[in-house]
Image (cartoon, rainbow, N blue to C red):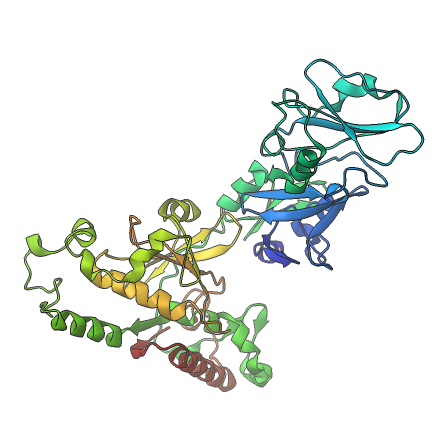
Length: 486
């Protein structure tokens, strides 16, 4: 489904990354609600509902912090308007307190019910009129309760204010406190229906015809969730000759006669971006260095995981954290912060939820199994789960992060992050590439009946060589590579 493909990735707008439904930008209208078209022309991400402008202050992945543009550091806007946010699309994460601004009131005071706090505003009224801010932490955001108090005022508007940002237990809030609370914004959540759609590997969107939410699935739209189209493990099924297959690139089918027009654009396809998923890198230099260090310290260079060791001498994850602590690589520093070498640190529970309890297997290799997942910010990821948790695996785990953390190349997948050494398992989080591996297109599910033309084959070889050359030339770590496969 084209809508599923278009709406699945998040987008960046001005200073905000990872935005998705209900927000949208030109070219992605079907991926968002009509009320939430985002303007990305300036330094900040903004949108308007009626004539009220909102600024997106922070995207937490599971919620959004919004500020009302006219009320940022200004309690007396020129054209105050009521704030209306559709709770069916972006419900408040916490019920905001009832707060109303009364402007240009002729009466010397505004009569409000017991339990409400009132603060006089300094709006520069030079005609003897006054303006007020009225709030109550014990009432929800329902302005009807104060309708009778507005008869003497020219304008009164309801503004949602976080009850946590504005403390009024000690009496009437100060003007400074009101201003700070409005600058902090209000938190809204994504709807349950969108979360359920994403959990079923769908993409959230909006149907203009039915004027309703829609969940775009691989095999077509759904009203709620996707029952099919979830990525599955693609088995490698070799044929007698790889030359009996035709190459398919996205929507472009390349027969032999027209293959010469393929060009370098093949770099953006499945091959380059999945190279790391199919390459087995052996970090021999690192292990030799570690062995040399152990020898210089008087330690045995015999691997504690060799077959000559008895079962009782094989370290478990517990002994690694204890008796072998001095041998642990510096990846233990992961537990001390939210980033390591510039990559994000994820909790095991977060990735367990993202992968639906590791139920969507994409494939496996010599070092681990790879699973499909969706993070809370909407990113589709491939989560690599190492087969065992040993000292050697931790070293390989650290090496992979160390080498790949700064690599940015069109033919290499992006390393998003990892778990810590103290996690239940060692997990690496990579960019997910939906087109599959080269093996899938050569011999697997996505292979077709005619052979790949020579320009495409040459392009495969060139781009593979370029990516490997870049991999070896980048960084200070010496890499000895013994095997590359599809």
